[in-house]
Image (cartoon, rainbow, N blue to C red):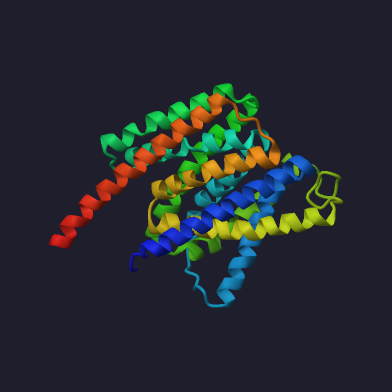
Length: 308
């Protein structure tokens, strides 16, 4: 399979950023304004993703491959954990805290890949974790909406998300599948898992706060729109990870950090103190340094190949 062009990668990353910011704001609005159930919304996203991929298959955008279900189950479970704990973090934290806690995913992925997959990272790249961690600490301590439950959800979310992103890359290479082919099997399996879990952890679906309760038409439309955007987010995540790397995707995710925090302040009136601004700036300095070092290392790897 030929490597994608830089323009293709840039376009897909930009699409992912726009879709991710949109779904964060819509989900936050549904949680805070209407109390829509978190896990049910996640399940709806999986169902919409599954339906979207069925349509893509009918239009011959891809051809499915046969994969043993048991081999897909661990990925499906981490997929559920990734979205559920991310949404729980979003529901219980301010948008700023939610985003900056997610920056810890980068060092976590590096640790998993170094320990279990024999991936290597230079000392300069590893040192960029320091300002990222310092920025997270500054924001978490002085965030006016800091709460223990929210931080616990965010921490578990980081661990599960890191494992999920590493596995997405590994499974695509292991099964020789593209993003649509892998997601085609995983999304319905994840939806099935959540359908079994929802009755035990959420209100009855037809109750006032249930997924099929009495909601205004605009809420129903927002939920459907959120599901359509979720399909785009999932496809672009898989494509970026499969065609680049989990760390590249994760670092690209930091580009949406500033925009999301700014929109959180404007739309949801999340407080933003001086120390939070300092924490955000410190974190982003680590991200910028990482990007600079990685681009330099990749350039050195390309030169020998061009000269050979």
